[in-house]
Amino acid sequence: MSATPNPTPNLTANPNLARTAPAPAAQRSGAVLDTTGLTAFYGDFQALFGVDFHLDAGEVVAIIGANGAGKSTFLKSLVGLIGNAADMVHFDGQPIGAMHPSAGVGLGLALVPEGRRLFSSLTVEENLLIGGQHTRREGPWSLEAIYDLFPVLGERRNNPGQALSGGQQQMVSIGRALMSNPRVLLCDEISLGLAPIVIRDIYACVPQIRAEGTSIVVVEQDINQALAVADRVYCFQEGRVSLTGTPAALTREQIKAAYFGLAEAGQPSKKTAKSKAIKTKQNGGRGA
Ligand SMILES: Nc1ncnc2c1ncn2[C@@H]1O[C@H](COP(=O)(O)OP(=O)(O)OP(=O)(O)O)[C@@H](O)[C@H]1O
Ligand SMILES: [Mg+2]
Image (cartoon, rainbow, N blue to C red):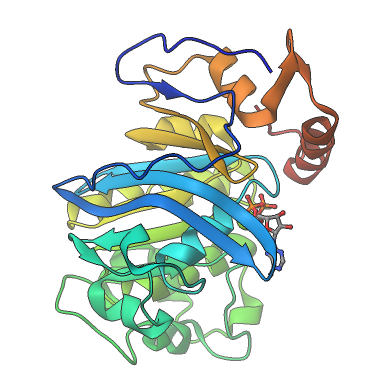
């Protein structure tokens, strides 16, 4: 793997993917959410290796990366579904890495999980109400506000989840998360398996959610979509941040190298070439 010099000051490329966790960076003041040297394990298997990340208030940040890069693990670590040392994750400057998952919603963290996970026999409205059932913070989101955001859900409010299209189910999943009035919305692959026109409708909600004061993290397989929606992008590779910067500062070559891991002179490594084949299949051709 060849080293690439940092081309701009606001771009941090790490194509060497150092095997040791980096020294903890100083916690960023002003970030609503940040991680410092974040690691994550499934038993003996290590999935994250020292991830430094920050999300500022009002930002939309996208996380991209191949299958198995650690994107979902990262989101699970942020909401306490995977436990960590307390000071590896900070929310508003408070260490939350060791919190119980049930505490995250009260703080203002809401996860839109991969695969939507609706109660298929419950109606749209019942599914939405579950989102605010246990912990509902003060804020702008209510059933009516969700129906304004996604009018089709208002029309179908009494339909069971199983009667909805994939795009409508995704809208319910986002709406359910918003019902807790989160300060940070974490979205895992909200466009997966949806047609481009539906993806456009789903992403149309992002400016309004941001305008209501919510910061957003989107894990997104479609790189073009990620670059279009985000203020900043993090690329994950094999449990590490391989590239980060603003969409304007990142070149296609840098993103490809960071996404797939180029072994030498533009050749993907065996492992990442396999990931690419899988991803291209899953995406119906939407890749880097
Ligand atoms: N419950 C689990 N138990 C053991 N290993 C897991 C578990 N979940 C994920 N992993 C492993 O952790 C690594 C990171 O997985 P993760 O699901 O975070 O990747 P991802 O970037 O979200 O991938 P995808 O694009 O396929 O959703 C992978 O090697 C995966 O096999
Ligand atoms: Mg995932």
